[in-house]
Length: 277
Image (cartoon, rainbow, N blue to C red; front, side, top):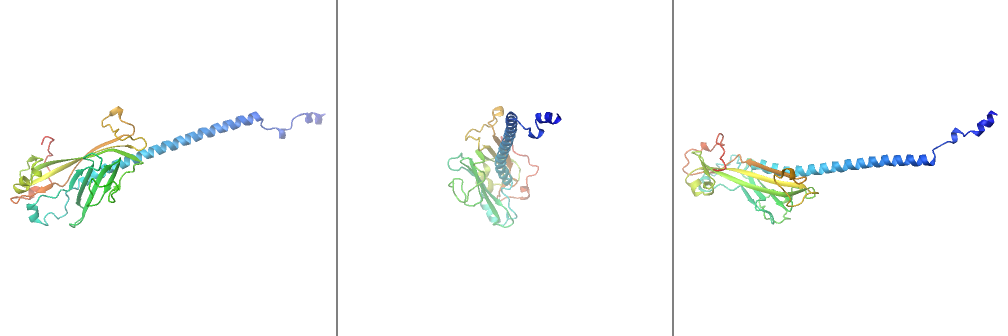
């Protein structure tokens, strides 16, 4: 009797998932896998975008930081100032910074400068930065010119065009001239005229450089779309920088009649000229 009843019951070892249950299980597993894949893809994409924008920002800031730090060394001379006393009193000082433009760019999109980098008279570093077709090039050649060809071998890429679009790069050089003995500001013109400063009086020229840069990540940047001070309407990804630097070393125009050279110190305590001077 018991054996007959047992024979009529399904065996536990023979039971399993039905086809419907199997389909439901596969569907749930696929949904979980799809959600995980989407989350992974979104995380990787977001991380890549953040990384690319960070690289674009770093490259743009590095240009401004390098130029402004270098400009503070313009006019630096390590003990070489009095090597040729006669020349100091008979010729204007060399022009150690100049602005220009690469082909097809604005007239103030390139800067060339040099300063003494060591104790010897030949220890001079020559540097240049220019904007060209949305990228910045750098040179360390004495022969570099702003209007050199785009593929000139002494101009090398300082930014990656596939990473960052440099929409604007502009340099503005401001000068103020001071009578070295009376410490009176004379405006800008006297130091441009060696007859007035250098022949009849000793002058020092204080200089300031304003650097403006506007950039975008390369994947969203559009040339000519920079909007300084746009506020809430600032284009996506725009980085706008405007930095000023003052040279620590003034250009000196020595007059043969200079009675005291001690007044040519570092200018400590002398107020900066106002924009009206």
